[in-house]
Image (cartoon, rainbow, N blue to C red; front, side):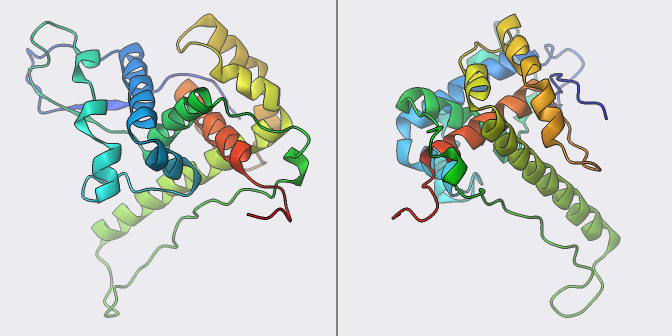
Length: 242
C-alpha cells in the first residue's frame, strides 16, 4: 500500500483568465492555514475549542461558521503572487478537518496542552461521525435522480476519509505520543518536519488496517495528529467525573 507523504493540491482557481497570476504555492497555502488557525484560536478561543472537541459548523450560513470563517482570519495577502493580486476569483476549498487541524495545533501551542501518559491507557476510544448510508429514495418514496446519488457518494467518500484519518491520528498518538508531539514542534515545510513525519512511518503503517485506503500528505497527517493529540489531552479517563 502506498503511503507517501506528499503535499497535494489544496485549492482551485475559479474563473481566472489566462493572464492571471500563478495560483498560490503549497508553501503559501500552508502559511495561510497556519495563520488562520492561530487567529481563530486567539479571537474565538471557546468556539475554536468546540470545533475540535465536539464539532462546530464551518458553514458560512451558520452563526458559528461566520465566526470561524471571519474575514479577520482569512488574510489574502499571504496568497498573492504579484503586487496587484490575482486576476480572477480565488476560491479556497478545504475540508473541515483541514481547518480543525490547524486550529487544534494552535490550541496545543497556545494552551501548552499535553497528553498525560499515565492516564492515556484509561482514556476511552474517541468517537467519530460516521457517514450516512446511501439513500436511493426521497422522503416521499420517489427514486433519487442519479446526480443526487453521485453527490451522496462523494459526500460519503469524504466523510469516510475524514473518519479514517481521525482514527489513524488517534492510533498514532496513542502509540507514539511524544513523537506525535514532536511533529507539531517543527516549522512547516522544513526538513525537520519531514524527518519527524518519516520517523512515524512505521507507526502509521501499523495503524492502517488491512483493506483500508487512506490518502496521506503532510497537511492531513499533521492535522490528524493535532486533532487527536488535543482531543486526548482534554479527554477524561474512564470513570472520571466529567
